Length: 398
Image (cartoon, rainbow, N blue to C red):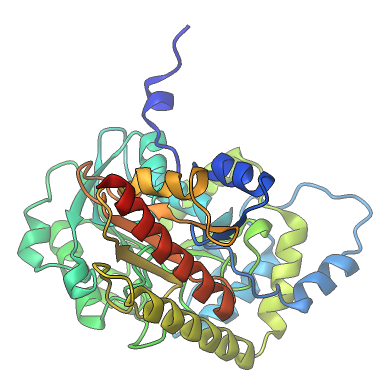
């Protein structure tokens, strides 16, 4: 029997597909530094756990498909701190930011439609596009200018009668690029001229080290066509909670999203209750300390990368990722080799190979996404292990 074309086409995650090799390495007694996945090691705020412990319901019942309305009120107050005004009907709580991405595609397109996207991009957009039956039309950005956007004419020449929207992510996963106000205005102007949606993934809002964060919701010219995607996963080191949201002032979009939400019943109830307690009581000092910690980690990772002959990257301004060009011919083979054939002082590193962050099949073969989510001393050790691994890998290829 044959499985579906969709099932054959959906790509494996470059972030997770090497996990069996990492598990095997750990079984052999090798310490694996996980630079492949954006799993913060900063503790989830105690406010989250306090709420979990105090959850008083006797029955864990179905919740509201839109999300708990008290939690949505907390989100509205949170967004106002950033100059973004939403009403309750503008927000649907989702099962992580992942479901928000899927809902945004389903609500704005039909099978065969297209979305313009800037590569490299968050790898799971590829998989979600296959599930939705839509095509991602890539525009390649360059590491030389820090993966910033090209001129408007480069973008507009990719627009066809099937184009439904433009996907952006700022601060960016995997590049760490923070789009400037001018870049955001350019995207808004293109969308307005061509009647396109702008779908903006802004889950790393608190992780900006240089420059200023501009939301798609700050741009009045796309008020009726802007869709915001968000999640608490990285903000509160609560990746396992699976609480995200989608928000838009476009009532038709949100009514469609709500119907998708009703079909999947409801988002997690207890985790919404816990996330609400964090949003309502977390201090600005929490965000400042978290931002300072990741800035230091970024600087350590960049310092060590710059010591590797032939490696290249620009210092990212946000998120907690570096998209680095490494001096190897085949990053996929190298990433596997690091887990199957290499160790240094009983340690190795796991990276996310670059090709999975592109829609263009020929790109990313020398690039890797590195997540600087470990403590400073561990990042330094991991990067030094990576450097030795590159040297030995290339020696074996001579």
